[in-house]
Amino acid sequence: MTTLTIDIHNQEEEKALLEFLHKKNISYRTNDDLTLSQEQEEEILSREKAFENGEMKSQPWEEVRKRFVRT
Image (cartoon, rainbow, N blue to C red):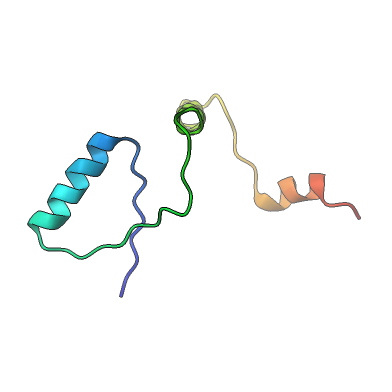
């Protein structure tokens, strides 16, 4: 079995995806262990947009980790 992860950004996307899955008779599971508030979702989308527009840079995990791990 292959696992496919889909990031749903709003209720319209969720509704469209569920309609498609039902129409094609595709079984699926949801992972609702983590629920974000509207404010958290907006912050994530804002940061994603800033990154895509070149207004924000990413850093490798090892560099970030070095700043927080004491030697």
